[in-house]
Figure 1 (cartoon, protein in one colour):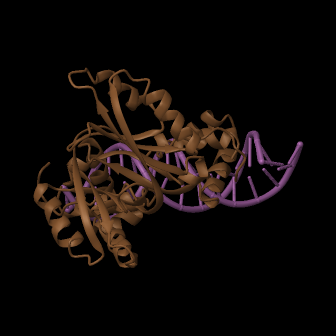
Figure 2: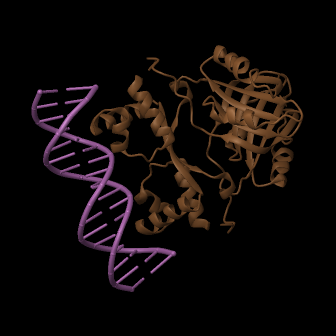
Figure 3: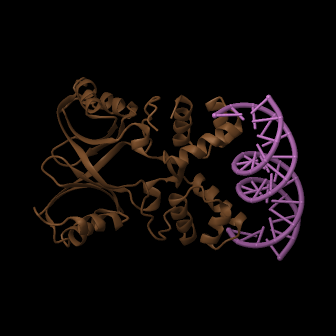
Length: 155
Length: 155
DNA sequence: GATGAAATCGCTCCCGT
DNA sequence: ACGGGAGCGATTTCATC
């Protein structure tokens, strides 16, 4: 992961459809050398995949909400975690520091769907003790583009 | 946005490198008809772009944190919002319901970088009144793959 | 590991239905 | 609006440095 790999990784995040000719200019290498770099980034697991970035509003999930969850102490949370992983409306599920056990990020069609998720999916989980939710009124920024740290030779 | 578009959109989210031949099998159409569908999804803004999905740990930002921010009442928040949008470590910035004004999602290298962001970037903002932060101890799920609602002819 | 050329694969365009 | 085929640009591979 040298400076060249870093530039390639940054470029691929911003435009995955760039093409090797474009990437070669960014990296300063030849086309085939650039292709080799990209392939190795995939093999090392730096690049996990290639995805189309969709507009939430256009695919019927304009409402963004967060839900804090407290689980009953001593209870096994495996069932809860599996249930959250399976739900397509649960975009994120993190165990967090502070007063709550988990923080969920949800995308749903409307308030009705949001409430239905909480009542049926969360209250239905036996391990769930208490929940608190909040809605995004406006989104200033929402990206999956990661900051790529400069040239630390760690893998 | 019929059922065919929906299937294409779902496939493109899961594997954006699929290729039209693969997509044609999913959609049940010919290659050229599928290409036309994809093009129109881009034109309508359903597909916003194509991106490589990177592993946060491999690019030097393994630490995930959330920060709640309260702004001083009556203050203009434009400067704050612009500052957050510019920061590459701020992945998300939402105005939210409840006791806080904004919720930020951050990706940084380590605790030192996390603290530095809060002290220098947030405390440095004149509009910022109060903040509260929490860290992700473990991530059960973190995806940008959206649920695509079935066949609502809206656009 | 990088380069440049050759072969192969997949996309794009066009026309017929 | 869909399907098929020709043309072309792209990627991938290979020999060489």
